[in-house]
Amino acid sequence: MIARYWRRLAGNVAIAAQLRGQRTVPFLARPALDELRDQRIRDTVIYATRAVPYYREWFAREGIDPRDVTGAADLDRLPMLDKDLVRSQPRLFVAETAAAQRASAFSTSGTTGTPIEIHHDRRSLLANIAYGERERTPVIAICGGGFRPKELYVGYETSTFKKVQAFYEENSLLPVRPRRRFVSLLEPIERIAAIANAERPDVLVGYGGWLDVFFKTIAARGINLHPPKMVMYMGEALPRGARDCIEGRFGVPVLSRYNAVEAFKIGFFCEHRTGFHLHEDLCHVRIVGPDGRSAVPGQQGEVVISNLVNRATVLLNYPIGDAGTISTERCPCGRTFALLSELDGRVEDIIALPDGRFVHPRTIWQVFKGDSDIFQYQLTQHDAQRFVLTLVTLDEAGFQRARARSLPALAGLLGTGVMIDATRRSEVDRGTGGKFRAVIACQRS
Image 1 (tube, helix red, strand yellow):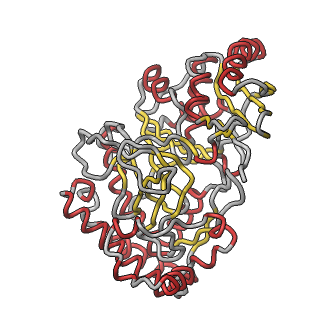
Image 2: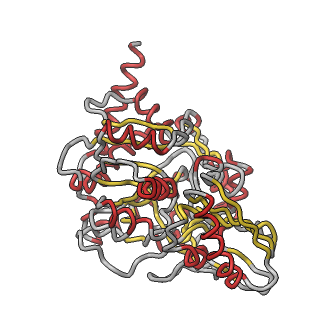
Image 3: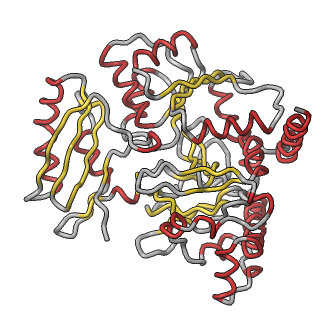
């Protein structure tokens, strides 16, 4: 009992050590922010070369002095990691230090294959609370300035979020804890609406695809809902058009945070909702084009991250699988962090056709946007010319109307010779980890 108390007290000390000034970091002048980011890059590279098997061997083999990596530009020139290698040999990327060997293990959701094991050291997990001050500022402002907005979090019992919360309970003595209720994603929508009406949360939190279906179902079935002050989606992108629907019909602003098991804090929305303000000093993000080179702002590419905080699993130049674009615009909020446009989907979800064309999920969305009968859709490619379209509709009549409209348009998009089977479900299977993919492409060799 005494040991647990001292462990939790030590956790508070670790949080306090990182807490000062966190709300002002996103507003730093660019030279100061660049130096903060580059110092973290230098420290991480030196640490990785000393303590992480993969990087120790790689720098020695290539004959590169890690001290030559002085900032973001140098880091970007290093090769990208092989995601399959990280998946198959995770211990290569775990530091050989006492703290790393005692780290907590997490798994990615495995939405595109086998989950990847990622370890986070105790100090970085606790510092994550302090870094959260940056993200809490716009939430508190939208919720009216209350210190502890009340949250209703809809997710899975085995989620990373719940595991992290359990870690905090065991390793810190926070005097004021979040006012948060967790509800299983498996509960019926009517039941969740009833809980929301009873709890009256300031913030409703959930996966993007689930929130889209939730609000569409509320509207279609005429279910009574006391609207929250804001909606927060995490874990997956919000389907296109869903923000306009929720904000326009229910008058509730929709924010997001960009997190991943590989790097807990990547970016966050501010009050203006212009895109993700990137935590540049915590996780370096670059966008890589099809040619493997860094894309210029405004050009879409694959999101590649380097976690600059975690000292257990160290990943530098890691392709996370998302497609995105660095914005050319400045947010009116005054934050100086680089701005990532809303994610454009998964790299793995781009469909390859026999004629050599590639079809992006955004193009598929054009077929279904504005169709009031469709709550959710999922297009699965089983081979080059065989597809299954799953539609979530209110009833069978709605399915037949939506099917008649969408199949000809979809066939025209995918080309002659394709076979598309359409089926109706009350809810699309969300797969491992609860994440939803609107387009699932067959694996390309």
